[in-house]
Image (cartoon, rainbow, N blue to C red; front, top):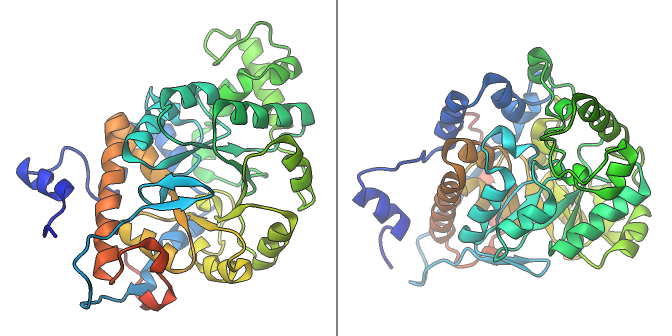
Length: 397
């Protein structure tokens, strides 16, 4: 076993790294390269951003148990979730309007994920249509986030398009059905959707075109007349999400697709059980990265109870606040099968495009794999709460 991995060896050989190593530096550089209103849209959260802070701080309250008894084999960070093989239990979370960070947007992120062997979950609010993103990285597996529209024909169309395009799972966006109170966005007076940014999946959908009264078959907002853009924005705002969601709705969704159904935004153990009984194939513990509800409970604090309620029935994934490889390990030890990262890959895309996202993933892979070995494990599946002890640090740095 080499003392340093090939990724670390390469950085040493090159005398340093072209791209950031720490998440704090990714964020600092992204702040420098992006227009202020774009950065605040991505980095901001609800209210005083207490939930954002809580999501990250929650990881500091768990300490990892270091072990010295081991075998000599290299640790293997790979896993499989819902039949999708992953070289690392880290997925790119659905994050809308990636064009704010880089011209390659979701296509560049998908190519980076495919090269790194990780799975991106495409946001419902994309700059490019879902078919274009799938075609950009045909060698990689991708999942699709489904924001359930308040129009059944449109809803069914989006799901069927995702299945036809080769996406491997449908992730129902349960944690963003009501606009959160986001002071940074309000202070800047900036919403990308008012100019039809991030609406590539809708502009390219024939049912949405019918609802918005659009002629032709536009794939982006480029070239649309101002009155058409205004109509697109108002139509999207009106039909974006249906007002109700119940466990019984999964039966209808199941009738539209054969893909696995994943429900994102589950923080209540009782809801987790109900969704299991209703036929969900997996759930994601998430509070939407603190962008929706201020003063909310950290998502990590919800993970143990949700995992216990679900048991071995279906996989539990995790999102919100993951910033390091050791964060990944802590979430897996508390019951997650894999985690999602959102802001980190957007910052990396802003700073380095596709190469930046690849570098970010390799940093996470190297740190996580080392942590896996140093806690005495060869595989993700053997992690458990026994690998953690209570810690009372409140400073990540």
